[in-house]
Length: 178
Image (cartoon, rainbow, N blue to C red; front, top):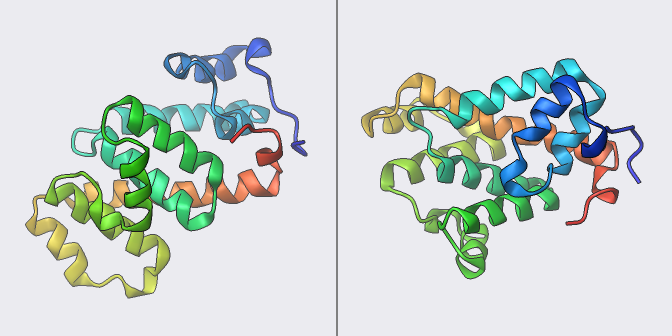
C-alpha cells in the first residue's frame, strides 16, 4: 500500500481531473501520475511537461517511450517498463519479443539511425554522466539534432530517474498492478 494519499480517478477534480483525463485513451490513469495527485501544483507542472513532449517537433512518441522504458529498466522501475512496453505495442512499434530484445540490447531499437543515436546518448547520460564528451554531443549535431533537442531528450530520461525514486520511496509499486 502506498504511504501517501493519492486521489483516485473517480474522485479527481480540477487540475488533477484535467491530468487524469489525458489518459482516457489508455483506459486507466498510470499509477506514477496518480502519485502526483497529492500536489495539484505539481500535477500542473506534469501537465505542462506532458503537453510539451506530446507536441515536440523532433522527439517522436516511439523515441520518448523507448527512453522511458530503457531508463526504467536501468532503475528496475518495473511499472514503467511494463507501461511503456504496452504503449510501444499499442502504437505498433514492437511486440513482446522485440521489446525483450531492446531491453537486452538498446542498440537493436527499431528506430532510424538518428533517433537511435539520441536514445543511446540519453542512456549514456543517465548511466554514466561523467563519461559524456563533447564528441558525443557533436555526433548528435552532425545527425541534425539541435542542442535544444539534446537537452530535451536528456531531461526526459532524467525525469524518469526522479519518478522512479519517488515511486519506490512512496511504495507506489505496492498500489500498482504491474
